[in-house]
Image (cartoon, rainbow, N blue to C red):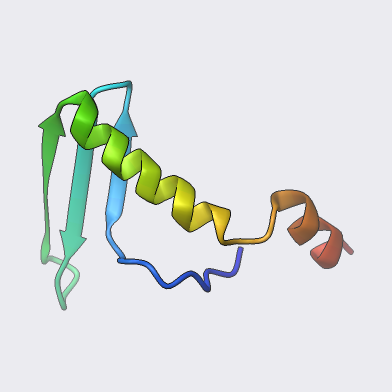
Length: 69
């Protein structure tokens, strides 16, 4: 899906209800680092960020209807 949302770019994995993993890449392929945080409050923040970012996009049904062949 086209990504036109103006939000911060990072990779986030939300694992179960308490663990968040964030990863960040540098200029080269080998410059990848990350960390995890265990805590439902931290996870709730990033779940909210995820919901806001995806909420700005077309719904999946709209996307499929305009791109179906």
